[in-house]
Amino acid sequence: MFFASDNAGPVHPEVLEAIARANDGYAMPYGADAASQRVQAKIREIFEAPDAMVHLVATGTAANSIALACLSQPYETVFCSAVAHILEDECSAPEFYSGGGKLTIVPCDVDKMNPHDLRSVIAKEGTRGVHGPQRGAVSITQVAEKGSVHSLDELQDLVDVAKEFDLPVHLDGARFGNALVALGCTPAQMSWKLGIDAVSFGGTKNGLMGVEAVIFFDPAKSWEFELRRKRGAHLFSKSRFLAAQMEAYLSDDLWLTSASKANANMARLANGLRAIEGAEFLCEPEANLVFAKLPRAAHKRLQTGGAVYYLMDELEGGDDNDLLLSRLVCDWSVSDAQIDQFIALATG
Image (cartoon, rainbow, N blue to C red; front, side, top):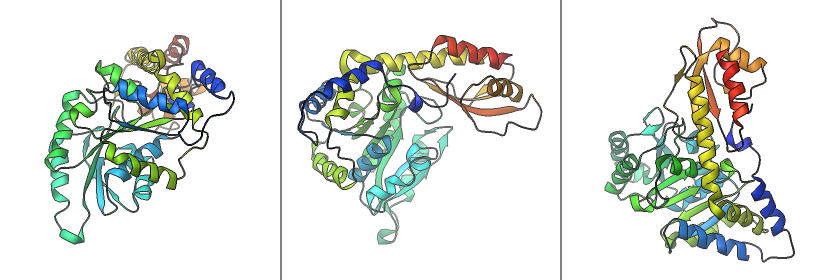
């Protein structure tokens, strides 16, 4: 019963097989291998973007931080939500890779920025001439940090505000596949057709060993990314092993199948938790994670029973009916039996 993180799940067997096949013989390094070229072509096809430039890195932090460094100057600030992953969970890597840029917080409704607040915050920056930070990129997370999914209209509204100020837009798509299947749209509809300039296209949370793709829809940014990736120590010599993972991920829609299974697992889990008296969700789970408030008694049974997940409040002390906040995440590999066992413990 492991519901702590989709980062902690196993690598999909088809991906492991692809890595093993890539280990046969020799291949040119630093992205010059044939698999890397095929992956770039496949992502362009999937995103309906023949001129897009595609770059592979091993971590989501590298994908976000180097992409944002290409979209903003060191004297600019990136606008992001108050709970954005780039703000709370990347150890100031965006500031580091940008060479000293900053992040400006936009208030959010649980986990989503709204266009009114985004416009207001952007308008207040860049008003002090040489003495203040200049306006830089806007970064949006999809799936959002507390488990909600921006609709296409919500994304469009945020992008439109950014474009009012002539600012580029970055999409942190660590769970891009989960959001895509939740919305039932195409990658193009959830990216460049809205006006998004760059996407961190996640794979590690959805069955890969460790690879993310950075997609620039403006090829003019490609060479800068290449240089920043090398300077930032994220250019792999044996890049074929990153490419092998991504190629397997994109073959036969494995990425969509895995994301659909993860979302379905969360739907099953959430439906079971609704039966607990007093249970609350911070926001309705639309993809593969949820922040749920459950009674202390339920958490005690879960902890004693061996369930692994993040409990945000103190377990000991207090009344058994007190609601404690937890973070629950499903990946593609969680079985129905594990979900049902978790629900049985939680419901008592």
